[in-house]
Length: 203
Image (tube, rainbow, N blue to C red; front, side):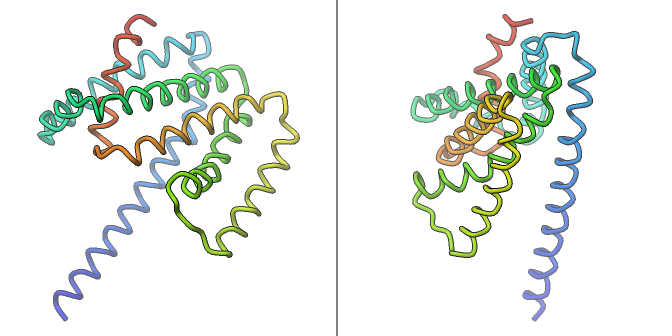
């Protein structure tokens, strides 16, 4: 009974921490447009370049304390891992650039629609590429969500390219990262290191 009780408490603690982390992440994400809009006079490419370079610094510091340099070195010297990460790095850079440009030019709704599309694209990619299956109730939920997004998209055709660009870049980014056997921190560090020379040239 003691072991089962300890496990239940651990699961409950993990759930609470996960909920708090999710709320914090989405809260920050919801406030980001205000920050990027305030950077309107700065070109979006320059903002993305700084984001990449400072991310490299922060991630290297974190990996230092987590003793993750060895794992990062293995990723950066493995062709099997490095080539997919080149593709994922390009996709996440495109996603960041489109999003920041859209917010700076007053297309917050169009960019938000793109992130509403991402979960449905993830479902389709999981079904078509990864062989995952959904129950009937799950398909009904996806269809209802899709109908709602379609109605919203019909009223925002002029910025639909922003929505699709964000959804496709992040959806395929997530697919590539799902099949690469690297941790999230190490993978993101590798991606930003690969992008760093281009970011330095963009400042």
